[in-house]
Amino acid sequence: MKKCGKLGAVQECSLVAAALLLFVFCLLPSAFAAPPGSVQASYDIYKGGMKVGQIEEVYKRVKDSYTLSSTTTPVGLLAMFKPEKIFVDSSGLIGKQGLQPLRFNHRRERDESKENRAEFDWEAKQLTLIHQTQRTVVALLSGTQDRLSAMYQFMFLPLQSAVTLDFPMTNGHKLDSYHYAITLSQKLKTPAGEFNTLYLDSRAKVGENRTEIWLATQHSNLPCKMIITDADGGQLIQVLSKLDIKP
Image (cartoon, rainbow, N blue to C red; front, side, top):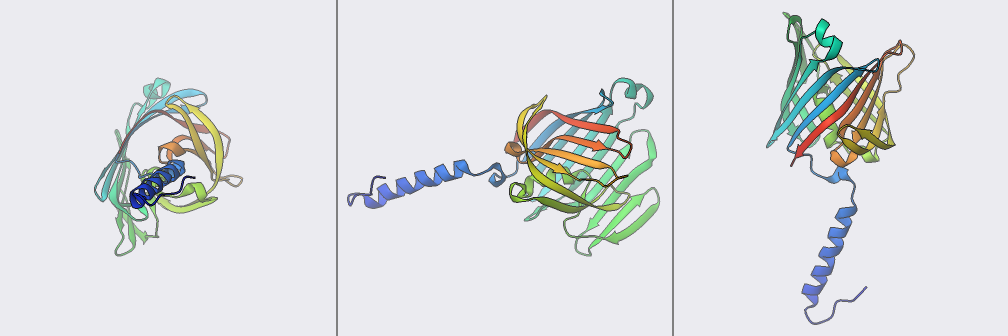
């Protein structure tokens, strides 16, 4: 490497150092990139080899807060027998540990009896689960996510250097603990493109539902595929079909 000469030594060394620093940052994994300011994602849902639904999700960040919305629309035969849409919303704060939900809501277009909500009181460390007129208060554990925010919390976690992931999650009706093993996966082709991925596997025991998630590493660890296998072997597959990300 060329040494910095005496003439203009400070300027020349500064340019060399800056070039080296830029080169190093170009080699860093995508986990170090700042999470996006907005995401619009579409997913196709398959069951038994047939497309049964489509999901439209929107994530927006405004300073230190976020909003998330998800709308599931049935298609094909499912639309004939169950034409109702499903709406899921999450909103809260963004801190050093990522998303910190404050409110969660899950509702069906034609069935109010299945509406669930959750309210997060981080100061009092209480989680209120609301179903119709019933309110249940449980301890709010550190890192708790709701069913929707959990999928976008991956953007804030250093998963490339992790081998396992544990976190509590609520669907508005109950609070459960989730555990995933993390490994690198081969490139995954989806209708939205081909992605390098991390593979998360819940490694379910006999009689439990198994969840597998593929995260697109070049797109802030956003989910690009998910498979839920029930105890009887039936599978629900969710695949990314469109993705629009903005800083």
